[in-house]
Length: 221
View (cartoon, rainbow, N blue to C red):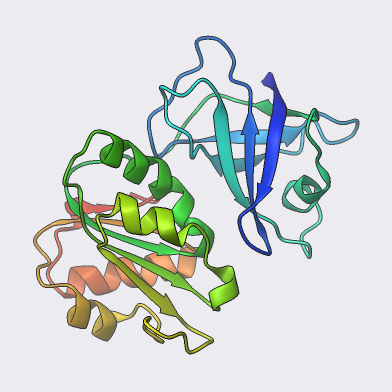
């Protein structure tokens, strides 16, 4: 485990925080990868949770975009009490969600984070990488980084909210009918990340609609 010091903490919405830290020399990762993170405070050094890097490998800092769960005791709750200057502990990078080719990205809530570095990386390279980003949240207050998502997807962004009517967005779960309505071809790569049951359901739906299982990229793949 390596120590990193928090430089800044920013609220992106009511329960999502952007945490920027320094970066150990020689530390490298691929966009979409994650690492185990612990808080460097007495009694918490061994309590690790996986968080995705939302910075890019070439940046001189590390960034994590983390959803806070106040009802969960442990790291994700304690992160809300962190301050600039506090330290985290990180392990080696790992993860299965890496860019394979142009396709559709489907994210539920904090499941956006593994895709964020991929989307930022492809946009920085000016690659035409996104056919569509479907971003599902419960309510409008749960949305974060909308303006940046519009930009890095070249305005190929489809928002849907499952528990609130929001003007200009869909009001549906991402199920088989939703996918059939909004996706024009299933012969492409699909990147899926979110709550486990959502990922399982969408993966099954995509295969039923003709998607190649080898072109469905998720943490389970």
